[in-house]
Length: 223
Image (tube, rainbow, N blue to C red):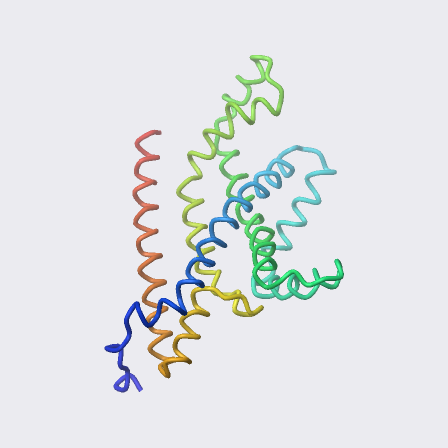
């Protein structure tokens, strides 16, 4: 089968009409899910660290539940259940956005929680000694340092998130992988199209991994 591969006729002019739209959606979904996941995840992390059972238990239950379910299952649940609950269809793309933000928040919350707990307790006590409230202490002292320390891990999770965007095929969303699949079917070369998709995913993730290493070195120098 490999001997029958023919990549010679593939060109960007042929692939662009099929792939570009999906490529843009995959990047857009990655950015939106990262920003939304970090924002929601930070709230969840603060709830878990609040020391108040009314906040801590629901946040812990949410995080542990989401982290125990495969993403493709969550995608299908949101895609099928949200229209049933609100009485109208919201589309595969919007379902993917809601799912990824909700799902990734569970992982980002654990990153944020670990980052906050990595800050020396002495700095926390110093903030309280200066008369700061819990919110001021978090906003001005703890979170800025924690986010700097967490930046490489955030970027690593974002790479994983980008790879996971290929799972939106399960609900019919048009992502980059779907674009390559469509190109392969229309051009009569599905195997070659999937191979090119794998190569592109590999090169993009390899480049992002190199960026993470550079950022990690910068953070270590700042420390």
